[in-house]
Length: 114
Length: 278
Image (cartoon, rainbow over all chains, first blue to last red; front, side, top):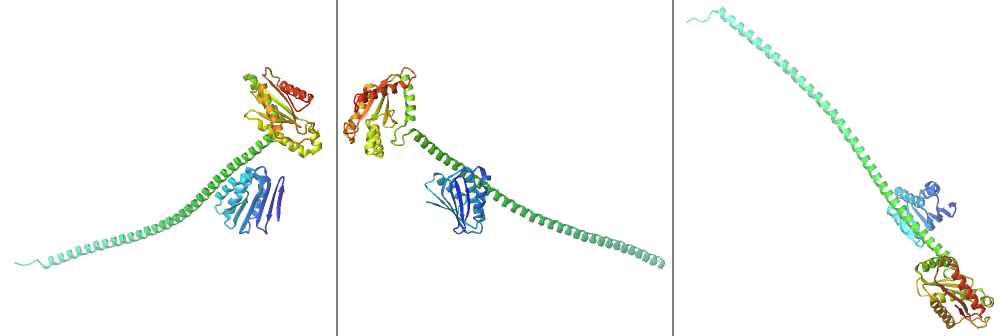
């Protein structure tokens, strides 16, 4: 288990479970502050044929955060070696539209809403 | 007739031979020239062929290079097109995401604004919203020269009620009274507020004293129609004292209406409670 933690948020990468979970409220300032999370997301793809990104506990994500997530999805698509699943929640207003837009970047992306 | 002399014949033969020799030489010269011309033509052809071969090889190399460059350009265009498409989607994703977050914040702002103007126990307007409404309606009534009416309702012996039945029951009682007060208001501009503790205020725009008294009577009727047991009260049930006042605002002193209504409420209390003073 590899984790990143900050003010109001937590990111847990469980390599055994092939899942990475983002929870809390992510409101970091700009892409540079998102770099460690971006790096962990990209690392989680290494040598893996499937990966689940669990966002069901991510209450808030600012614009830099969604840009980071978009870049990660493009990276996963270009690598062509990992089947990506994103789990979202219908109870969190921003996830409906934004996660569906990510599917446009990667048509093979599987979206699951709790 | 006698033929030419032998001497002449020899001369003719020599001349013929000389002419033949000259012809042979000429032909020899022509043959040599032709041979040179032919050799030159062949060598020239070889040179041209070699030159053409070189040119052909160069052209083929150029075609191969151009095809490679064209393929690279096509790949580059495909990559740029993909990146451009990605950027468009990312831009749209970020824009729509920002809109969603704005809506989320707006919802929370509205919620917070409502919380800031609503009494959390009863759901009625709180003191802040009442103050804003009084300021607004006072100005409007003054401008339009319409009466503004106020009712101040206080629960009689409420401390005894809380002591006897407990604070949760007291809260239930206040919630029931709030429902009753909300129920007697019929117009959009009317406002029921919890002023504090067990005291409630009704603000009735465009209503004179007679209209306010009618609303107060209506409250009393409803309360007696659904009596709430209060063994600590001399009346045996929960009762209200109500002060009612109305005025045509003439100046900026909006506090006079509340002061007068509060004075009348005090009078109702003084006169024995469970009554209306107007």
